[in-house]
Amino acid sequence: MNKQCGFTFIELLVTLAVAAILATIGIPNIMELLQNNRITNTTNDFLSAVNYARGEAITVRDNINITPIDDSDSQNEWAKGWIVWRDQAANTAAATNGNNQYDNAADPNDDETLRVFSGDGIVVFNGPDTLDAQRTTAVTDTNTLSFNADGMLNSTAATAVFSVCDERDNEAITEITLHRTGRAVARKIYFGQARYRACP
Image (cartoon, rainbow, N blue to C red; front, side, top):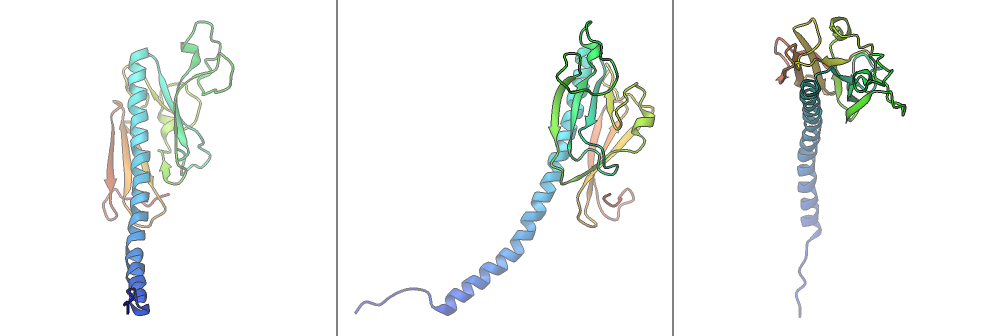
């Protein structure tokens, strides 16, 4: 007589219970990892754009600008991404644009789009409210960063501070400090520290 092997009903219930406990513990950790990765990726993309814009400004000996794609939310201007561009008036003698704002239509006199960085629209990416008042160039787009031919930020302020965060309460935020020299530094600010502020 053959003896049949398999799981008993009790063993199956115990296995399912253990799996449920492990999933309960693991899923929040995975979600937190994904949220942290979004913030890190956004921060790295912005630092990459700043370094690229500075390098390009030095190379072409002209102002290079970074403008948010959609800054309609005053507390989250940069979340949907940003564009690195050059005013077309400086590119060709025939250009008649020179209006100091980003134009992206098909007209040959419109501005030169150098790179486009797409945000995920999930993280909150807030820039300084005083950016426009402190800019020393004639760019008319709001919230635009502008780098000169020396790779320095066209600004009267010593620094421009950005914050990258998400909807989690009392979580660390990433603060990006852009110095007038063009140097950008990112660091974590943890809940309870003096510089900590809630995510907008």
